[in-house]
Length: 74
Image 1 (cartoon, rainbow, N blue to C red):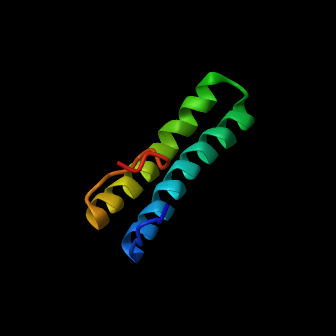
Image 2 (image 1 turned 90 degrees about the horizontal axis):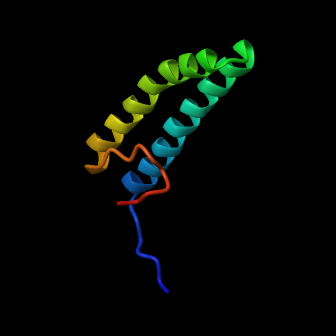
């Protein structure tokens, strides 16, 4: 099966989607390990979510899709 060739914008979109998702998980994990409680985990999510949304908005401006979950292509 031949894969369709994709341009630079779509590859950059993949990188931005994975970067935003990784930052969200990283922030929540670091806050959880410091506080070792659910409140710490939720604080980390609250800190990482604006970064995740920011990269989603960049993806929307770049290719027309927000792509907050990186493994879903549609």
